[in-house]
Image 1 (spheres, rainbow, N blue to C red):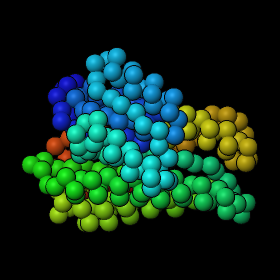
Image 2 (cartoon, rainbow, N blue to C red):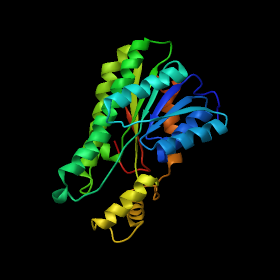
Image 3 (cartoon, rainbow, N blue to C red):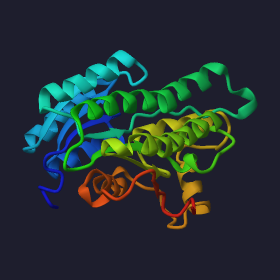
Image 4 (cartoon, rainbow, N blue to C red):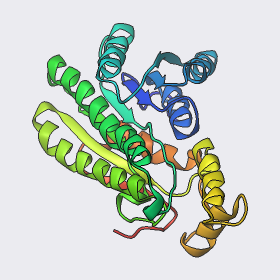
Length: 267
């Protein structure tokens, strides 16, 4: 691993208490980035940040509700205070709660859309304002929005989630056009079936609504029937793409959503 690849990067990472967010924070710090881990789960991000510091990296943490405008602005201010500026965002926080379409209550729709669509818009807006205020640099600012296979397809049991993730794709494409003149690239990646704490809960919920008969069946079924590589993924599978998008290697890219799904979606 190149321990200097991301040197000079000052990053805010949302949804960083566990799963892909925590794994990416550790990976970026090991490559020289200074990282601020943000999440509603303050104990979780505090622990991960300490693990990064124990390994010799630079990390801080911040309790953050991505749906709060005040929290988004405060998180950006915290990064600037700790690191001097902000030049990298991983907009990773997300939620899901499957329901069959006719039975989906408005509360479910509002919850998923508020975090996955508005939350990403809210955080990206706060970060981009600070980047614009800092002025153009001799390098590119980087915004990375985490999408999903559901950014390009839909399932009958997670329709609000797919709607929100399609909105993330629109945010990537529209944001790229809006921010290019300020030296900001906006890209993203779309994971597929990832073995994380979020998927463990999703798996339980799918059994409860009768989509599958037993725990673990959802991941095994999708791997067998929909994933060309015949296996589901782990947080480590996204690290190479995330680091690429955070580095200067991706400077001539913007408005792109890269799929990391083992061959589920063909663009």
